[in-house]
Length: 625
Image (spheres, rainbow, N blue to C red):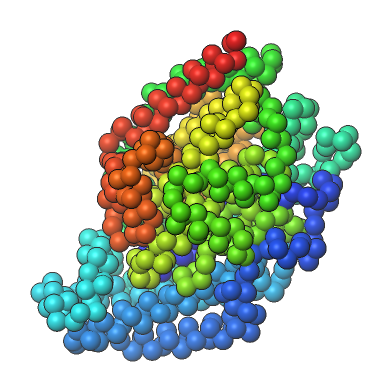
């Protein structure tokens, strides 16, 4: 069923924007894949034992596609025929998810591996072919009379499972076109994926940033993974060098990257227009039944609380003792921690302790994931940067990390395991048709984990200095998640609107818009370095339009949920575990109501920003002593 929702499956492998790097290796070298110890690699063989098994299932999908095509024109014959078609469709999509997942996760181990470049391309083309072959299904269902559908469901017990799915399909009836047009759009989608595919290969396989002077005074290659480490260096020259080298790499290809990104904006505008949506924004939000007001309220509330962000940046400038606070000074910790080095095994123990408020059952699943081959831990040559969690239905979830021995990476581990366990619970408790959850709620589980972990660490801090460090870390989560992602969301709203209005968009225009937003969000106490104007070219999520705002809304919801759990609210904890088990069996707004959070109102965002203000006040008082 997932393929029928458009490009969800093709877009499933999207890393988070956190840029990490593997630990326990020479800083001047990045390990080859074959040199990474087995215990730090995910068990991809739990999907397929080998490529031959992949090929067998790949061919099976093609056969089953032909079988499903035989249902064209006869769905309304009787209830059993209708049920058989839906069940076969589920089977095909489950297999396709496995084929796609294996090929892409193997490619993410090393983007330069030509074997898996080929398998990934084959999987992507298969999905496009599948989408075209199944294009008849939805229009044919929508052409069935309501009384026929109702009678089928009443007389065939198996169809009751699909009642919510069918209701959601009918809700989007005006946006689903006739069979011929749906087939054509399915063919076009393969072309429409071009900008994303070009950007991804360029960003992860081809783009080089050269060498900079590292902490030991020697030259070291700058990579995506190392960049985050260098930006936290206490040496401003290292931060500045990494910052300038990183953005010079993108600047060297400014016009090319601009053309690729604008092409992506145009294809989104095309699909939203053809599907009769007023805008790309409304098309994107409608898939999860999210009112546009939720998006607008987020930006409005963050704008209203920008003065608090300015106060935080003034404190940062003061504590760091800088005459000028630059964009490359925003990630260095204001207070240094005694937990500077956290080996991976210790990180696992800390995460388990921090998540104890979620109960014994959650702990059992967590430990299974940490020790059961779910996680690919360290960076290696050609490995996809960042971190993500994903996995096909019917196997356990998978987590890609690029772990470094620092506290930030402990939080990344907790974050990604939040995603993974959400998927585990959904897969275990929902049939395939409802197992996948919408992106709007995807960041809730990950951020609840981070919030519980920060609370545990603050409560168990050994000194005021350590507590101050942790408070600053949490404030940085607000800055980078709630404020920064909202800035990204505002950028998307502006540039997509321009594309839809057919206003001229060049790389220079994109840079100007992005630079001005940085001026607005960071204020007069920060030097907005000219290089930051190219940051839009560094954000892979911009190729999945209107994705990033959900980090901010999810963060706000998670703050509310975790506060209640920490206060011992058993009803909220029970509701939260029910939320994790529910997949997409309810709309995202209704799912969050299980946890006592209503995202149609401004309160969750407002309350989260008030928490930010409170922690800032507490840290300011501690640092003034």
